[in-house]
Length: 437
Image (cartoon, rainbow, N blue to C red; front, side):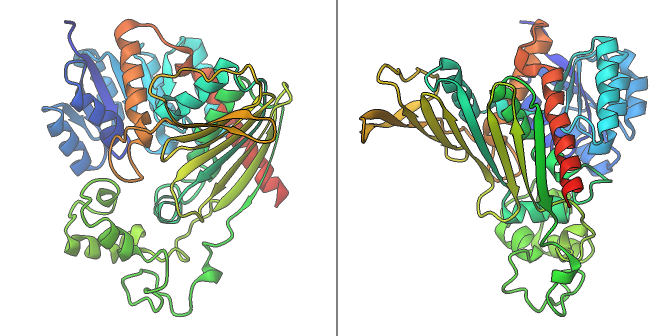
């Protein structure tokens, strides 16, 4: 057997350590972490120890200075959003394949700087668009590729962010301000835009978008609401976003992400202490956030396909729903439970055989007796909760990336140019949203 591939990891947070790094730790026969860079000591030291004593660096630049002696085969860049482009470009000079967490860049200018540098260096960069590698979305793509639905006419994709998740990430958390990270349409829905781009097979010719920050605003704060939830909020019993109900009660048995983003002391007392001063304990109406809490984007493609994307903070589920129509069929899917309803209009249509997909029900529908199916492409969850795993996509992307590092053969699904299109779509959507206000 060949030696495991040697990885350097820049950023030991929820993605670098919990998502991509955890795959490496679970597959020691194929990969190992040889160096970790993170400015936060507990994250850096903890991950380096888990990795068996990897070298550790406070700054990614220090790690890159030692690359010749580390013997690395590949790199993972999972630093904060605004710190993706510079380390990626610096790594290109060393010729390493790079897994770059999304978004690849937080501004349009930075994105094109990255794209130009990658083309000049003929670099191998894979962006963390993990949803392409989930069983559910691969099943949807397989149905489209089979031709059973005919020509694709419409896509309606709904990103249900989950009221608790939006409050955590986009009101209180790292992505609450566009200038510090990126617009919500990029930070959250570049996954969805990537799926639309993947299904369409091309970039849209026209795009429009509307959306607002409507609810999480200071003028909507209840009378007497303090800056921090634990300081005697008068509506604690009725507010859906009361921080202790989420971080202390609902996540009582969770001692990793997202609780560790709040504090390393995950005891009840430790969480309550942290909520008294951490941004994660702030009232959602007093959190200095500026990204949209709902947005809708409409796209048209040269083939005649039209697509819509709806993202909303105000949902009871943290999942995605898809509705697609074609000239010979219709598909409705629910990512979280893997359920796909497929109607095939043609009497000659054949249900494609897809790995990992089972038929739950088959029937005919009036008035013409066309065939209708309920399918299951239920994902194998990488872990519990809504902040990790991406329905198996994290593991799927890592497996594909490591296979590419091992073989030197890279599938089209790992194309940088295709991934960058979804970012360009997101920047166009944000420009359109702001222009429409």
